[in-house]
Image (cartoon, rainbow, N blue to C red; front, side, top):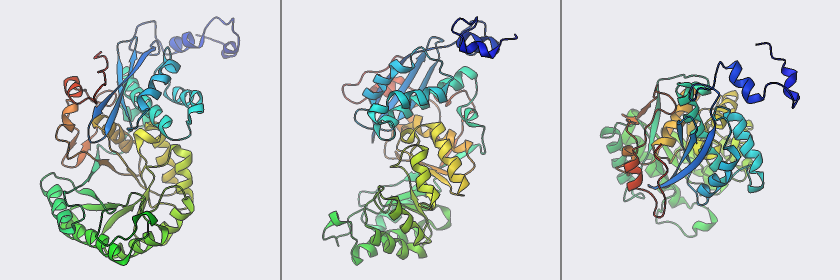
Length: 412
């Protein structure tokens, strides 16, 4: 149409940015098919699952709604409510710009890391669902397309006797044989009966033997039928972590997760370099800048960002891109409802170096009832080909399991 783009600097120019965008996109004022759409509201509802899942909805004047999820945390809904004013009236298709806008506007609340980034993550996921619906493409298409049709899920496992190696082995076999998973994870920060002072993070020889026995029994129980990872939850000192990693080198360990506290990256690098046991970490770091520091000096063999916590879908994609430069695979930490889980899977299909996405709710028998679609089948997430995330919330189930005092968001 021959618009001079220098006119955009002129407040008296004939076209505003919104009008120019609408014209160049071929939109003539009809809602729901292009750029002529605005955000009208942002709402949250918390569900009382094995974690308090924070669901986020972004509403528009086109009548299209996007649903996302933020990592749980006290104060996250309040932060999202505060941020809603910063994006109301904005175009939901401008995901990157809105994300950076929220980071800037919330800098006083600490948008480098922590709950503020988590709250922004929930909005960002909802925007991907919303933009996909407006453009009539699956969310993964907004991330560059897909490498695979389904994403592997690994099952985080628990037993009533988590310290009993035989009980862990039996549960591993059950999860593989009855639930169909070919990837799983067990905790190693469990009592052994040999502790003297857990506060000092030091593992006595008996504790090392006990944890190694869990690893031995689980890996032998599943054999080649499944990969088995083991989580330490940042519990051990550097020397103990090295000794534990050394002892379990003889077993088929998929990875040893978070063996040392997350603050000191140099120690993390030292532990990882000391062993051939694969070391994973990353869920307690935020945005690509922090994860880059974890990756650039070999701090991990496998990076484990938590998508609804680390900054959202595009931020996780950026982390995966950096990891790929160091030939490091991505295994996404995830304790979400079906919304966050499928959103993570959309990221997992859009990156080349995806290993798996965590499933941390097999003990919640109504988890899959929250949405109308099947999410995990035989240990894999089949990537939806419908617009957005491809999920439909069952609001009756949401209402039944809301955290006490919560209000159900609008059904529209």
